[in-house]
Amino acid sequence: MKLLFVGTNPENTGAASHFVALAQAMVEAGHQVTAVVYPDGLIWQGLASSGVHRYPAQFRNVFDLRGYIAVLKAERQLKPDWLVGNFGKEYWPLILVGRLLRIRVALFRHRTPAMRPLSARLIPRLAQRFFAVSEYARQAYLDRGIPGHLVRVLYNPVDTELCRPDAQRRSEILRSLGLDEETILLGYTGRMHNGKGIFPLFEAACAAMAEQPRLHCLWLGDGPGARTLRERAAADATAGRHHFLGWIHDVQPYFSAMSMLAFPSIATETFGRVSVEAQAAGVPVLGSDIGGIPETLEAGVTGLLLPPGNVAAWRDAILKLCDPSLRMSMGAAARDYVQKHFSTPVIASQFLQILASD
Image 1 (cartoon, one colour):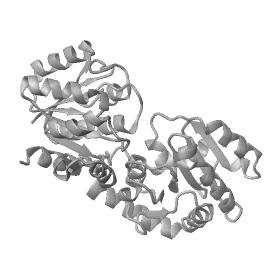
Image 2 (cartoon, helix red, strand yellow):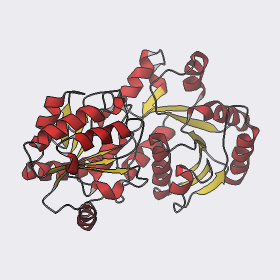
Image 3 (cartoon, helix red, strand yellow):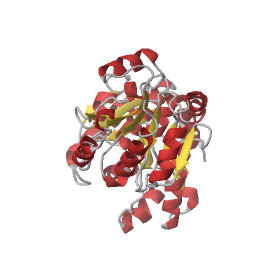
Image 4 (spheres, one colour):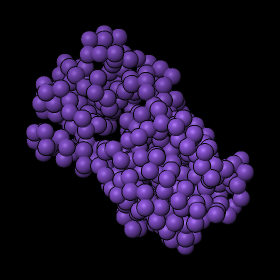
């Protein structure tokens, strides 16, 4: 099958990571993939060594002729069976190109906020396939009146080899932080703002540290709440046990250093790719029981689901996972779970089946 992926959003988002992983998954499955993407952005760089031919372009809006020219150029070279889009501003351009050239269109929706009324009504009906990235997101679209038969679910694929556990990486990262092998490292990675639950997590971690002297926190990311979080940590008695590395472009190596990952959002998440990537590295996950997060782990087996923002519950869960035997059993189950449900071969196969279905 020939697939033309179009993703010209320049931002480093989960949707961008999904775009790269799905395109690579289809290449690995033996399909021919070309991509029209923003030059030198996350997607462009992520596909650099993937075997995907890239065309630089950007759709600033539905009237941006330069974007259309790039798509038409790529189409002439590839003659694709499907146009695949990942970002809202490209929905209408791809539908228009698809209608003009008689090419089927598959669109992914990564967010649950409502589209504009006309788009919300027409886009799922005009695209030949319309995908949600979780059952939670699918239900949100159905609740707004989109017929159920129009919305398919396809989870984010994860390269399990890229995220595999690595004992040497763990040792190197711990040494760089001035920590020894006996350290229990609670990790957080992502945007830092109130909705991500970073402040209740901080309180819970500090309370757990009072009972577990080997517990440390690794904070990866940046955002409007980062400065306040650093200030609170600096003023706390546990200051030396919080390690802030800022924004890290490639977080996969750091999963190997973590003993557990916290995904503490108090605002709704559509999915939760970081949860899946951590489990692929054999790391159990503490996740908020909200939105699409529960779909990313097997509660009680690969991690724990917790009430969002409940400091006492999170403290107790952190301390529970300080038990090495529990961490080991959950970590082993976590990697197996990801292999079965989110690995690139599994998702590529599901994507192909959905595209081929009537």
